[in-house]
Length: 322
Image (cartoon, rainbow, N blue to C red; front, top):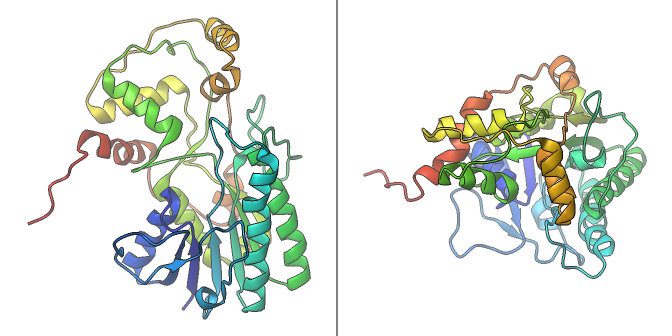
């Protein structure tokens, strides 16, 4: 039976992946930067410390055949680093390659690298992003993920380790933060949103769907040596997404039909055009190769994924089972 090493085990995706591994009885080693004050159910966690400096992964890698590398410096909405390129590279490229080299030395068979759609770019026009499109990252985060992909491909060719690269778009689910959380909070507040005229199309992936796909990538022979785009296989406009969130909350979707040109102009005047683009622009990925070549079917439909995502906002203090 496979034994997995999971980095970023307390993050949004990592925690869900570990929970699923535990439920399925799959052996794994959860790796975290700092041990929590209380041990979560499951195997003992491996504390890495700061990944931007050398880490001895040997104890954690013992017996592992698959690595799922989720730990990363994620995209920052308000960057504070004096040299973002260097900080992203130290974490997302250098630390990744140190783990990869040690994994190969320990006999790991497959290395799954969770990258980002930002490697492709920030928006699509006439067709969805495909894995073999020329990369066009626009920020330090996207460039660091691309650099890691290229370094890993050279490493895999040299060591013979099976490499799987996954580029998810926006991930949503219980515990999601940042833009998706703010959007859910706005819908819950009942504040009218001037987004009724937005006619974009965006790919998203439910947390449960991404975890299911990563587990498929850990075992499917056809996943190795390829880069995969992943989504719910149902793209949404922003008004459709807001309506689904409102429906899951049992609230009306309060959408005002403000012209999108006016919204974009206002955002530009406020120096927020990039942030507005994440709401107004289209960003689609082509998930057909995953469906056709791997036979993957997302287990969660969008409505179910949204209901799971909004549940913690509706009942933030669940009553423990008696």
